[in-house]
Image (cartoon, rainbow, N blue to C red):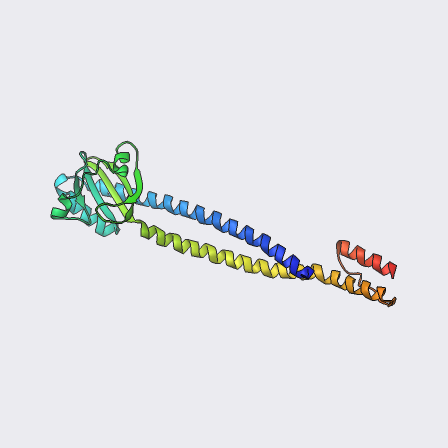
Length: 224
């Protein structure tokens, strides 16, 4: 393998490892940030719903209106864990919902400013991200399917991968230029040394090479 190819391979290998490491770090941080922002957004929505919920008898209508306006599932749970309102269930389906006191986000919201959980929904049948806050009449909860977050993760991951691919392409061009700039004077000195060894003492190397390669060119010039 020629010197230029070896230099290009080594430089690209180092740059590729660095780019992959940066992409992985950015991807993990973006996911963590998206989750944090999602929790904050759902918590704000849950607080807004809490302010609108003033009567036990109107809980389901409040949940329906809020769910339609927010585009997320809204659930209102009383102090005993009974679901009084849910934007996705009405009538008999609403009354058939299980007691929510054992739900981790509901239990946490009773003792902390907010409660959040990511789990499978036994009623909706999919994985959802839940955020709940304590309300005067119980707990107000807002949730969204995790597939929405996964879609957002996929978009951000694609953007990061595209940026990494662009950076790697630019690095490949720079690495090619670097390998050529280093290998070209070395190859020239090799050719000059061979011709001098074959008896052509009129052959002289160029003296414009930088650094140690230039020193070698000067020494070969003096040797000739």
